[in-house]
Image 1: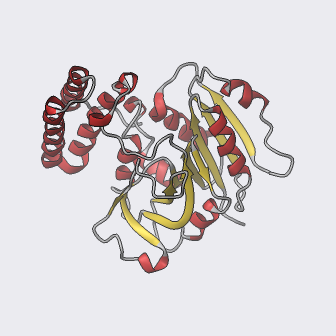
Image 2: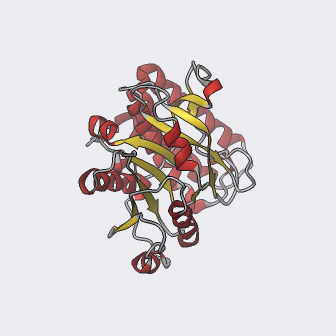
Length: 299
């Protein structure tokens, strides 16, 4: 009997990309048992689409939709998704991804093929590309010191990865718990994969498991270059969450390093000619202060 795999997709107001994502999931050469779609109270046509979505006549994959009553962020969505996987499924593994992730038809198969290249694997991450198939510059994983120890086998050892596309076992989730829902957005995947790293160091990027992350622009996240005032609140969460994560996994050194990095960014903002300087500085200061005392519960 083969390895059973489910998928968790968290979505918010990206109905066209969600359609493309689900279509790609239903065409996988390694057939998924169940796809759990967590709708974060979208106010476009996502709800109507999901309520009428029947998959296709060929796929044996079941589609389970959970409509949330309010937007609890990507962090809350993944928390709910993994809880549903544990409670309402018997599959051995779960493939976690964003709604703007478009996997190649053999992406899951390539991940499965590397599952037993090492014992006690914690997570496997796909090789994330942008729309033009160049390397995606957002959600970049961090390699381990011995990153190339198995490079000849097509895998790169990682310290952490993103929820753009990772494969995790039921056993690992039961051991470490769920993503921190209180993070709301940004950094939940870093914290979660670092947490996996506390129980096993065998965590890898699978080079030939390709997915496309259909962001509007292929750029990293940088408050210095942010010109959309409506997105600045995200940097509060990112700052707070990363200070907490650094303190938790890298101790006092990591804590002060992250705070120092943010104050350097504040200095750069003050000296820059960019927009919304006061708002940017106040957002980071708020995030720094919150991060110093932030201690969310892990369930």
